[in-house]
Image (cartoon, rainbow, N blue to C red):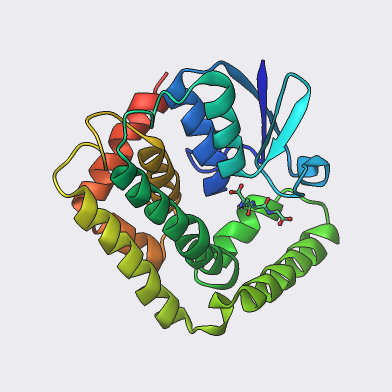
Length: 233
Ligand SMILES: N[C@@H](CCC(=O)N[C@@H](CS)C(=O)NCC(=O)O)C(=O)O
């Protein structure tokens, strides 16, 4: 049985991390049986010291894309096998745009921007004092440093919003009136887009970035369609 190690539920989603949500949704889309273990403590036990990771037959695999590659090799590529090389190229480009670019804009809005008061309460609100004051401040400092070193942290909030807006516009334009991005059934690109869009659209948290995502009618409908498909009991 596959075990998915992740952070835990967040605002109507199975996880606050788009990478964890991606793997959770991928497993559901493939119909693979899995159980979950939730907790920030698992970061330290993960092969990459980040979440998500999975354990399957005693083997631990970290990183959402390595996990998906592993699952494709071991359990069959039920989502992407029918895609042409051209479609696979588009899929890779969009996935990397979300993983490596849009992700950091979400991080900025949550940890350094408008959503910080909500996020602080959500992630650290139940801690006893003085941890409740010290831990979020330390975590926030570390995120700020990471964002700066990554590069996107050198841009202003407005510039980051413009960068994210262009990514989201590209997703909306490519999806158009279609049900799914590449095919008449979900592929890994749909699962990934769902994970990133849901993190901005579903939580009851308001900021300019979430407003941008929510302003694209086709992306809102797409997100709610996949949420119903894979998460309604
Ligand atoms: N490339 C990784 C990224 C995973 C990632 O960045 N996870 C973050 C949460 S969104 C994490 O575990 N952060 C904890 C830390 O850095 O200590 C993937 O695709 O899984």
